[in-house]
Length: 182
Image (cartoon, rainbow, N blue to C red; front, side, top):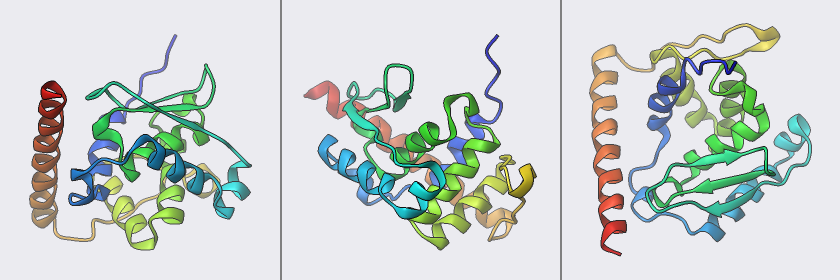
């Protein structure tokens, strides 16, 4: 029996805080996504923690979802909207955490490590705060749940999240509309 992925929606909402609104208007090519993935996996911090890895990046359907396929080899498929660094880091985290981790505490621990290594301390703190706000469980040292405080007042955080949510909804619709025209 497959275990339920209890915090999937909360993880997705929390990670929106890292998505760059300006760079997302022009998605990366599949070649650029593969180079980005290779650079991430070649980082010493990643090799030290997870060993040397290779993950192939393939084109997904236009507006399709991003996914990592573990069973048929280490492959990430990316639709047009998903060709951005944060989504790619998310898919790499699935590979490194193992697919049984789903979006649980082990996965979020790996995602935080990738963000810290690739995007820096500020992005790491932002994501950790967002995870705390959205009640996402994160595995800490010794298997304990890491806790963080939101960096802003609850009202300011809610307003920022509402803007981010609206932006991504509009952007996703725009990309899907462009795919239909092409």
